[in-house]
Image 1 (cartoon, helix red, strand yellow):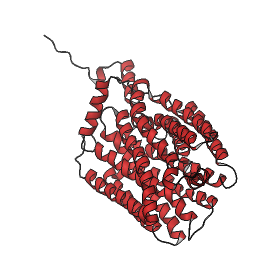
Image 2 (image 1 turned 90 degrees about the vertical axis):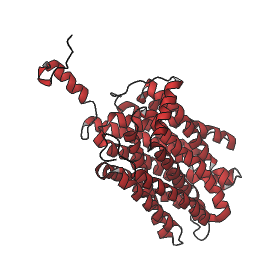
Image 3 (image 1 turned 120 degrees about the vertical axis):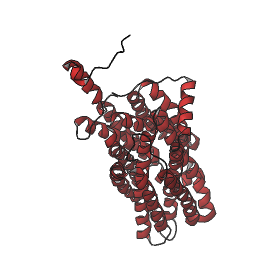
Image 4 (image 1 turned 180 degrees about the vertical axis):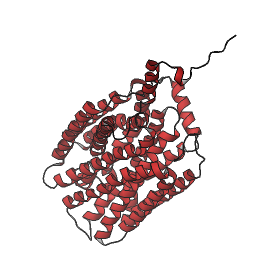
Length: 424
């Protein structure tokens, strides 16, 4: 009885050899037109996501006055969106594993932009919160899938850079969303400011739809509950993934808490800054735009283990500067804190695709569920810290979150390497 033997490379016909090359060369390489289209599209997607999500943050003191709600209640305009986004991630990630990445992301962006435009027309606080919840639910379709798309389509040696550029889009979107509304509400109503942001997001969604390449490495997975449960179980049996999920929760919780309540501090004594100036301080996001791409590339070169704890230490240094009184040092602290956060998020998010061996979409969804759950839970809890202890109370709360993040980073650095992972 003869045993079939696979043909050697020199025995394969030229046509078959060409097919083999095509199968091997499915990743998108840095420097190619397709790489540029991909990162530009995901940049637009990240821009729209964070602009829509965080454009309401500078409005919180104004909304407190207009709707007669306190700081913690006003934070619900952001928290309900991030809460529903977190819940939606558990649904849209598995759906994308079944029907594909691009259709889910395109539908998500258009729906979120339209819901934002509708929220600008709501006359009641309850109506605004309902529409904001729908914005968050819609955005889950892009947030859950973008990281997975990049990990599937970009060559592994360029994932850190591509993820960093995507997160740079997040940073610019967060900055522009805050900056535009923060300045506009000194001159026009908050309704008009939201209409402007919704219109910009529609344009970004159209660009995303037109230029993002179709998936080439996507393989449909079953939506059977048993398959989903198997993926969930596998992720939580891994030594590193649950730690990365926890890292996402505390990092994002710390970041959102600082920017939720720094405006209340700067509008009050001894600063008495006007709303437009506080909105302009969103330019500190420029440091995040640089750090996400730069540190993402450094993580590819030096390893994620080294870069994660270093960026968290930068966040702690930035937080310490915000605790002093001189305004220039407070602003410098916001800059350093933002630089560290976006660098840390770039490192941790690109690590997910390297550790998750199967069901990558589900793994990304769990990471981002934790990320936005941290935004929702800690962002609102920080309001209680503000009421109890002012900015000192908020600083202690954020400092506690960052100490947990640092301990998790040290634990991650001690994990054994997975097979095939050299620099993780």
